[in-house]
Image (cartoon, rainbow, N blue to C red):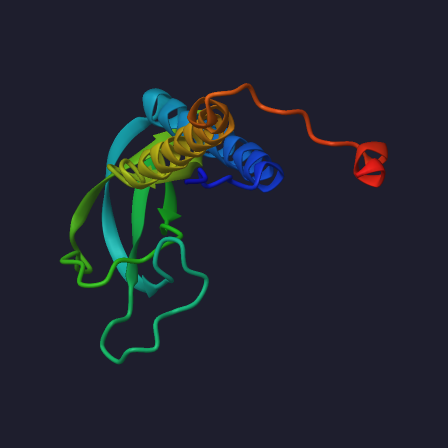
Length: 168
């Protein structure tokens, strides 16, 4: 029985890609946590509900009655009024115009804001998923390289070179 040989070059390229994507999402997660750590809180009022695409989507869904909405929240910092609308909407949100929400803002630049809890789970979950895929692919690459020699009971033979193939 021959052990399935995973195409190593493709596997290594995919593994390097997954490592790069994992690092990118880890960096984005770290930036988001740093923002939340340094942010101040204020209560804002929902002044409008804007149609926005779902997280991870670039277009609005075409199904009637399922329009994702994002609240536009007006908040006041040091006597100045600011508005914030999240980039992504939610289908079936219970938020209505006139509701009060907690807004986290950067004290150095109050126009940079996020809603309390926004992006708390999705980005770390994506990061963990890519990290798990990277480790899983690394294990597959390692096992397919080392188990082939163990199953045959002999050390792995060197790949024949062009002169060896001609002499046969």
